[in-house]
Image 1 (cartoon, one colour):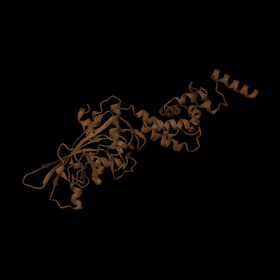
Image 2 (cartoon, rainbow, N blue to C red):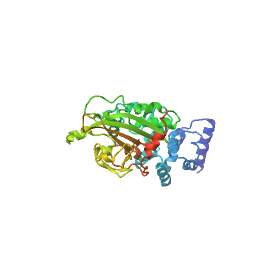
Image 3 (cartoon, rainbow, N blue to C red):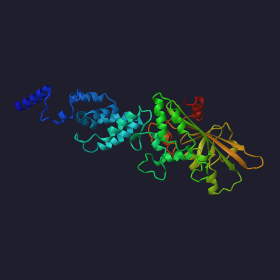
Image 4 (cartoon, helix red, strand yellow):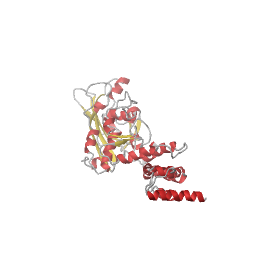
Amino acid sequence: MISRLQKSLRQVKQKVRGEKSCCASLLDVAGNGPLCSLPTEILLIIAKYLPPSSLAILTLCSKVLRYKLGAKYHKADIRNSMESFAHKYPPIQYFLKIYWTYHQNAWSPSLTPNLPELKMFLYLLARDSKSDIFCFRCERQHSPNKSDWVTPWRPWSWSNCESLDGHYLRYYYGRYFHFERAQLAMQKHRLGISPRKEIKRLTDLSSIPNSSSGMWPDIRTLRSMEAKIISNRLYVKAVRKRIYNMDAPETIYEKIRRRLYICPHLLEVECHVRNIVDGCLVHDGPHGNDDKIDASTLSQCKYCLTEMRLEFMETRKLFTGIRSVIVTTWQDFGNLSHPSNSDWIAHLATEIPYSAVKFPLGSIRKTFESIPPTT
């Protein structure tokens, strides 16, 4: 006991004199800042009142802190509080999933700082950036321009950071309409910076080909597109037009060629929609019974809550049976907190319900039309 006290006293004297101890412990070598020198009990009390994001960054500051707080991560009270906190912030849930998978293995203070903490740090760092975003796909910080040139033919290329779900939207909204571009627009909006440049790029239709190539059968029907950020949510209005021949043969090829994109659910399968008047059935193309539809009638997809208005106009009196079908859609893509957010995923080729909140019919259009364009 006396020898231990003498050894401890000698180490304290060496620290006071600024001398380097030859038998220093792992903690002595790792760091000697004011926070690191606090007892473990005090650090645990501090960690108890920190949010999960701050706690993750705190462990990056020093090996001492990571060593002392490492055991605290395994306790159920912190884990439960973090997971209950995560449902309010989807990105944190994303990091927690990776974090707890890692900590199923034995934790050692000698290991290199684990990537989940680094990813959380990059995410928090990117939130204050005016030009870069934290990409949830490649898990790095970069400009959304990197996602503009991803091709569906090489989705797993080393230079790609987007999965195939993003390409689905590009077929109908243009090359620059993807999550990363919208993410930066929302990020700048939250920083109080005008996202006008990103919104303009997001709705840029200049890359849509004019040829009759079969690769772009639906995007060439897009006549105009407008996007707005309202109450931290992205709203998009699109107008599409196609010439529809009532007398054309009902072959599979003609049906696909004449189809008019409304939303993924109304394009791929038959889908019942709610109607203000008496309800109607929307097929893969125009309404099955267009006599019940007028310009003031709204319909709504039960999956993604896309609101639509269909109009039928005679093109030329000489050609009976030929009409112009115009569909206007209003869509809410959510707050873009994460690519797996139900608000965003609902507009992809899936039948996952939109969210627990069901917007009344007409509310999305009313919200969009009542706010001037983003400046």
